[in-house]
Length: 149
Image 1: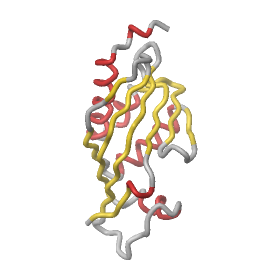
Image 2: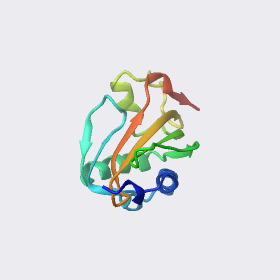
Image 3: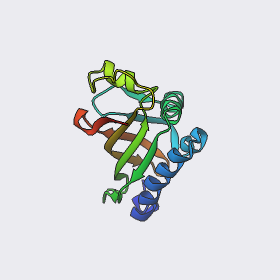
Image 4: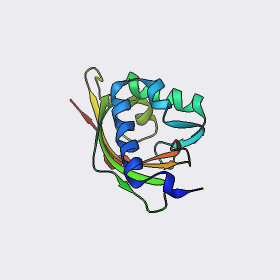
């Protein structure tokens, strides 16, 4: 692989573009950034999934929850593949909150109506030689997730 093909600047822009596309709610536009056999883990330590169908299901749930990401400054690795970006996100409690509660990651509210979740995480992206995302990992723990009004 010619690592010079994917510059640090291009990888940083890709990480920011990913956030913009998530915020647009357009799942097809998000998937355009990924290779067909991309793998991802969200959060790292939970089940790792592979392929477009799994990615589509993941992003459809996030879009249904009204996910909005505020990116920090991305950092590109010197290896020509990796980029890391801090993200502060807010989404509706439903539909993902009960899944997080089942995992023991938060205590469910008595009345979930109108509740939101705030989540801070680091997204690690690895691109292939064509500039498509081959792997995405979201690093966050229970202390990074909270219910807000």
